[in-house]
Image (tube, each protein chain N blue to C red):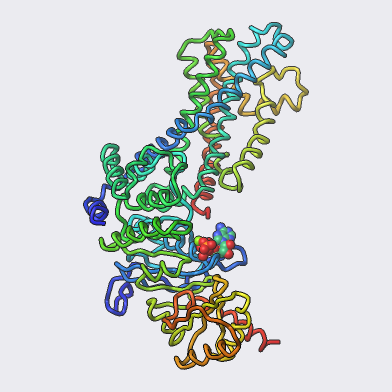
Length: 267
Length: 331
Ligand SMILES: Nc1ncnc2c1ncn2[C@@H]1O[C@H](COP(=O)(O)OP(=O)(O)OP(=O)(O)O)[C@@H](O)[C@H]1O
Ligand SMILES: [Mg+2]
């Protein structure tokens, strides 16, 4: 008891931490989880491998003349698709955390209140980066030969990360509204499947019916895919990049305040 | 007199009036008033669903009350929520540590969140871990901790920076007697450093052991408040405890005792034990004589102060009765 007393008493209060420090502490926590649950990287790896192999070897020849030509078209799209699907885990893990009561403690701490969320999103961005690197390496092994420079490839990845970070806020909203992480997963996937398939990731929309083509062309996922293809192919699709940045900003502006509202009022 | 002081001019840790919290139509907290002096242990005693957790969450700024006001450590709960948060800590009913991380990582995280720079965060975390006797499990995932260890880690996390007011929501539910004693020692050590503790429990002996004052909560209301001595005294002069030799005679014994004492007789969970309030001590010998006359063999009996258990049963029992009477009067 005396030892315990000593440990409790002998201390000075540390200064109040700033929002950046606390966000980084939360990011550190989320990254530790990758160490303990490496399975969470499994989906990130498995998805792109499966899709790339399936589309390249099943449909590649028919869609683009040869599998190797199709790969040049497909890999930037697979990069977008993989990262976009990875954003779902942001909502799922947030929901898990909240249902376990861990967040009750965080919310009762005297910290900048969005920091648990911001920290989680920072860690998720690291996860998206890992996914991106896996896709690019896989592509290179299969025969993806980007004509753009290294800088172009990096710029493409960065653009994908920016979009994914903004998109994640939709899933934090879903993660805060729904009761179970299973439901979060289900709803999010249901939302994402049409958005990623009704895009130019797998096929050129030129042969689609007019109304669908219009929808596909204004789909931010298509714009992002076009921009990434261009960057990796050595040119800049300026209009698309601007539109992607606008879409990202709009997503953030709408969904981050909703997330914060729900987060503050969650019981 | 200052509003934040009690009648003896002690500063108050919590001053609340008319707290109400509704979930849909259900009033989980239904008008709670509190005045808890600093440096004391205050106990919330109540059955499942009484509103203990909800009240604590309101006072720890996790839930906004629908009605009522409160000052916690002198700060307004709603207008100065941040100031409140920097003075209090909550150890929730359900472990709020991260199961996937190990013990030390959990504490380092909290230390960093409380503002320790990376290196001193590690130092502080291991210091606290050792004080709580968890150093051997520092590198083990919390998932693999026993219930008692998890609970201690949870409280340890609240102690990284010693709060002025600690909310402990059912700290010993589900723990064995040894782990329970460890937690009680922690609470005592903590109080000796000047921290105020608001503790909720379903165990009457826990409230009896630790709390300076106790509020008995039921259906979102405080139905009795006082020291454990006062609560016991409010119930009656004493209690007769009887243990029978044969459990099958208990129903008959209950009937005989309630006739002899003209008071309700409580059957305890032990199948041979019963107890009843006494209005006068002499009634006890008459009651025992009645059992003897009916060939019911008694293995043991005692006269004692009512336990908080009986206080609770009497209080909640009375409440149910008076509600029934009200309904009866209406119809
Ligand atoms: N988030 C919520 N939504 C709806 N109802 C709730 C919610 N939280 C609590 N309640 C209800 O409010 C009432 C009080 O719950 P509370 O958790 O405060 O009780 P308690 O005294 O802590 O009980 P226990 O001893 O079981 O922990 C219960 O009837 C419960 O069902
Ligand atoms: Mg509770």
